[in-house]
Length: 447
Image 1 (cartoon, rainbow, N blue to C red):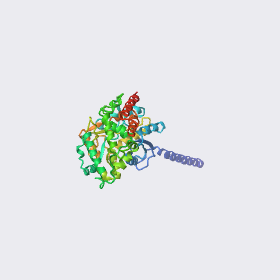
Image 2: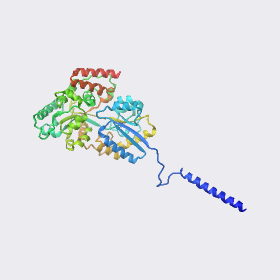
Image 3: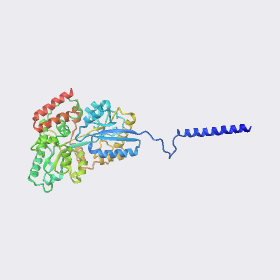
Image 4: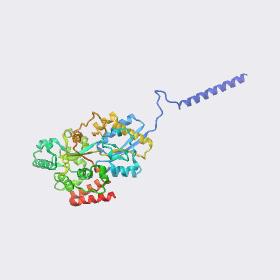
């Protein structure tokens, strides 16, 4: 009997130990009680490949703010732009097999080119709040494929203080003739040394960066071609280009070259890049006018706050067409790679939503990126920088031209027209040859 009781005690002890063991195992599968640290989730990595060099540091700061709130998301940022060809770099990126999860497209031609890698974003919350017309360039078959970066504009950015000290009333510049009159007058005062005491570095009216074929072949050509096409969609559908305003376009090229620091040797303009034009040109008051957009404000403010505060836009007047307007449009669109895994796509969409629709994100977009917002929900958050304000004033007055360059054939603006303009400036070909060669290539690229 004693032996039986001893065996029974041992059995009960073993049973208790096993119960405790199983009980302990079962707790791992139960939900964590408040205060307990949940099991660590798998980190999702999102790769961004974007083109706007001007906001690279600010975008990285925004990413870090988002990651602080979402520790299970790691975002890797890569930026290619400025003087580099983003389109070519994006193609190389995909061909290398390192496909980004978030990347940029410019409009209908890019949408057609990248359709196989574009996620349908029609169900995203920002779609219903988009400013009228800004989604047309990335809408196909009623599906929306991109979130607009911003509304941007460009024109002749000028230093108001230099104009005032030269006694030139910029408000009277409303067509090509009045622009030419002002430029000739300013050039005369620069060359006479009349302004040298106050502006010792001032050497020319313009700096013209022909090396940046996006400035010449895309943006400047747009001033002429937006008189011919009403939208980027119409340009994208065109099998040929007539170049009705080719002569007026020539005047806009010539005036910037003739009154630049390379006027006596215009071929040198083909080596002038963005930094020479902006950072070492307008920002240091070496020149008084440059053809650029409101995106330059942050860079100039970082060099000289006083110069930045004195900036505004003159129109880019096309003779025979619009004389008092500036081109306004969407520079690029954020897109999500449809081939990315679902977790990456979900995280990518969430980051873009946070950046453009949260209160913290809205302030970053307007006050750090200096963007004019593309959504209607930015109530009371208006541009604070003078260039953003200037563009908004043109837009509010209806003095705008559409951006049609996103509808050019792929590569035509930069690699064809921009390159032809370089040959013209170098004296290798005539203007007529530059235009005719470009027209022929438009037809070839549309085949």
